[in-house]
Each structure stands twice: as C-alpha cells, then as structure tokens.
Length: 361
Ligand code: IPM
Ligand code: MG
Image 1 (tube, helix red, strand yellow):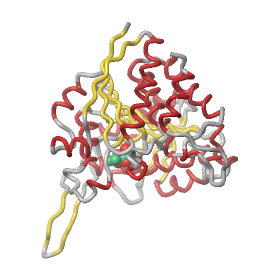
Image 2 (tube, protein in one colour; image 1 turned 30 degrees about the horizontal axis):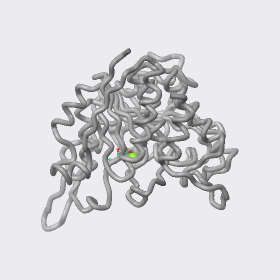
Image 3 (tube, helix red, strand yellow; image 1 turned 90 degrees about the vertical axis):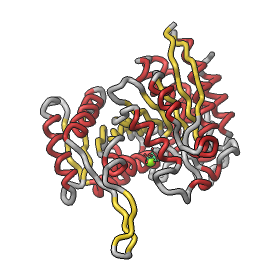
Image 4 (cartoon, protein in one colour; image 1 turned 135 degrees about the vertical axis):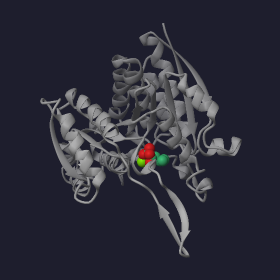
C-alpha cells in the first residue's frame, strides 16, 4: 500500500459539508487502488479567524508542506465581509496557494450529457463543451506590490499592481501546452494586449514557448472578446491559458455555461509536488448548513487529486464514472434543476451517498 498524507481544510459556509462528501469518496476509492490515505483536518478562512484570529496559521502551512495533497472546501462569508482585504478569510486561501508555490490552476469545464438541459444556454450550444482553463495563480493583481489604500491630498486612493516577469509566464504557458498535447492540441491565450504592457509580455512569451510545441496551435484572444465567445460558441475552446484575474472571471463563466458552478473542480499545482484540490464555487453562506449544496465539484476535485497527486488515472475515472451514472439516473441537487423541472432535488449528503454507493466500497 502506498501511504499518503492528506490535509483537509474545509473552511467556511458549505465548505465543510461538500468536503465531507469528497473525503468519503476518497476513502472509498483509495484502498481499491493500493493507496492508504491518512487525513488531518485544519481550519482556514473565517473559521480560523474566529478560532485563532488569523485566516491561516503557520502550523497549518507547515502541515500542508509535509503532505502530498490538500483538499480544500471554500472560504469567506457575510460575517467577515466588512474586514479589510489584508485580514479577511480569502487571505488564507491566497496565502496557502502562494506558500505552496501553486502557480498552475487547472479548471476543467465540460458538460455531463445528462446536464445539457441545466445550462442557461441552449442545449445545442453546450453539448460537447470540453475545455480546460489554465489560470496563473500566484501572480498578477492578486499579489503585485505596491498595493493598499491611502489618503492622498485629502482623497481616498487605492492601488493594486499587475506585474509579471517572463519566468512566471513561461512556466504557466508550458503547463498549458503540455495539457493541450493530451487533448485537442489547441491553446487560446487570453489577454488585453491592446491596453496592458503585462499582456504584451504574455503574448511574446507564450509565442516563445509555443515554438517548442509545433504540434499545438495557439491563438491570442482579447479577454472581452473571449468572454463573448464563451457564451456564443463555447465548443471552440480546448485549453485557455491566462493571467490570474482574467482566469478567475472566465472560469466562473465557463462553469456556468456547463450547467452549474456546483459541478466544477480544480487542481492547483506547482514545482513542489504538492497539489491543492478545491471546487471552483465559493462558500455560498446563504445555503450553508442546510444540506442542499451540490458536493459534486468537491467530489470531482477528489478525482483530480487521484489523477495529479498519485497518477491514479483509474481511480479518477472511477469517480467520474460514478458521478456520470448518478446524474444519468436522474438524481439532482437543487442547483442542477432547470426552472419548472418537476423532479425533486436531493440534498448534499444524499448525493454523496449515491456516488459512494456506485464506487462499490
Ligand atoms: C476562486 C475564488 C478565489 C479567487 C477567492 C475566494 C479569493 O474566487 O478560487 O476562483 O479569486 O481566486
Ligand atoms: Mg473565483
């Protein structure tokens, strides 16, 4: 048996309930593939602020560094909304990404055939969507200095800095081109080079990396036009690579057109060999604790954990097949029901039960 240490940071809102189901799925699948998982649970985000006065303690970062993988739920909530950015729950998430060097955020968005009706776009537009958003995760406006608020000449002023050096662009571009090789071999680089110098550097460096991947085609797409094309003709996209903030925005859009934000998983990887896996959706405080959240994005993140942290492709496929089977059988959490649909929604736990049952543990 391969021994593996997993740090679970479930966070806030619906984080704990969806993460619980993902953990059950991991526990059901791992032994079937010769992996013995050892879990430890820690606080992050608002839960950590309430208990320890900080969104992420140094001890938790150290435990994460010693683990093979981190499973994360979601952070943030109305309770902490008035806090300054420097101390709020989201800082915990940004810090763990940065400290673990997780510069490559993979957000696959595809349509489960059973859910083509759940999209707000027409089924003929969404059927067959299969894209991978590769978002740069440790640079750009999220981390650039200088930043902050000040009063200048009697006026409140705020500042953030978008900065990238060529090495940060080259390494994420390489991830995107490598990923494209295992897919339809097409990369769309998303930028705003008609206005931003950072984007002009991205275009140059992406082209330099592209030269080493002659089998992969690349196009440079302006971010505003990309946002439009995602709703007009989403099937044209294979791999999208882009800087941090553009990727944050476009990955929510990509998720929604596939049916529900509740379905999208993600993996954050770096050079250090540790992976962090989290659903793309947020903490949804309005539905927290009511057992109505959709755990499938968290469960599909568990599939990505097997694939990327343990090269356990068969385990990942087993989970995706189980999710597909449960959806094909007609089971839906509330977010997956189309307006006017008559079938009854099931809860978070019940959805987890159905997936676990399919896994045959
Ligand atoms: C995401 C989230 C985070 C981000 C927030 C919670 C800080 O929106 O993972 O997409 O902006 O990266
Ligand atoms: Mg986001």
